Amino acid sequence: MVDESVLSALREFVSERDWDQFHTPASLARSIVIESAELLECFQWSDQAAQDDVRDELADVLTYCLLLANKLGLDPDEIVLAKLESTKQKYPVDKAHGRSSKYDRLPD
Image (cartoon, rainbow, N blue to C red):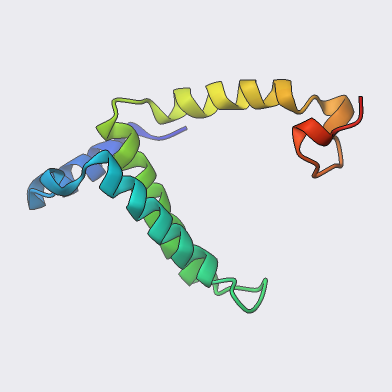
């Protein structure tokens, strides 16, 4: 899913600027939330947001997510696929199809 060239480019970008010293897991997690809020701001008054703005803010969110995974030594592809498998168990197709209910409120 995540191309190694993307991760390599991010690592190089951070290294060239000596920013890794500032990238603690907590600071990266905070940055994810901050950038997520900026993404949400694109949709504050309308579901029709400017695509360029959404693209840029989404790129910022993804960048910080990838940097955090890298900092923690986690493989983004692996953790997403593992989480997807556990979520499949919580939301079986026969109970969750077409529903937005939380897993503990799905019909038996």
